[in-house]
Length: 255
Image 1 (cartoon, one colour):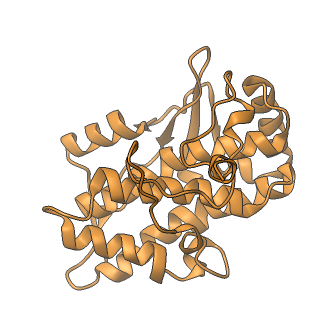
Image 2: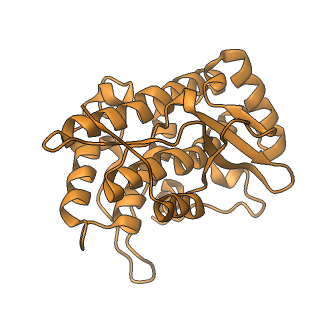
């Protein structure tokens, strides 16, 4: 049995300031859409079409890719940070999340939660608790939305999953780190996510993150980076046709 808890004020402030997580309480923001609604084909189609116009994107496919880069940063990143650093599990299942836009500022400013209660593991049962937290996020939210958008936007699921994977890798390798005070737990959670977690926790037959965990490439002029296996098509919506630093198109053109 897991223990009910609450995030401390400084913990919630950190998640809010650094990852854009919010609480909407009794009233959902006006400029918002429930993640659960996006699992409906008609509502998701409408959302993608509106976002395509807003981003001046050439297609739904490009739009869906850009959406998931942002969505993963607002959902997977804060949840996994809280899980590993605070040992607290938040509810980021689809029925607890709303996507909030800010007209004139951001097409997806933050994700707001109806219920911000946290759950902590009982002694000796962290592995069971961790599975529950991961499954609610991925199988109960991200994985379902990827399946819907992949069909509607005619985009391979692999591109959308790598957009998620890149955010997960960066969180553990750059922000949390696998050394220092949280060394053991951070390394254990990261290794579990990318090598050991079964596909069922993600709503897939196989773990969708492990395939993208390639070797880091070292350069004398930049920090180590992991070249993507798929292209996210960011250059298609960039005003200056800018490519991501780890874009496979840049890698292939250098030969």
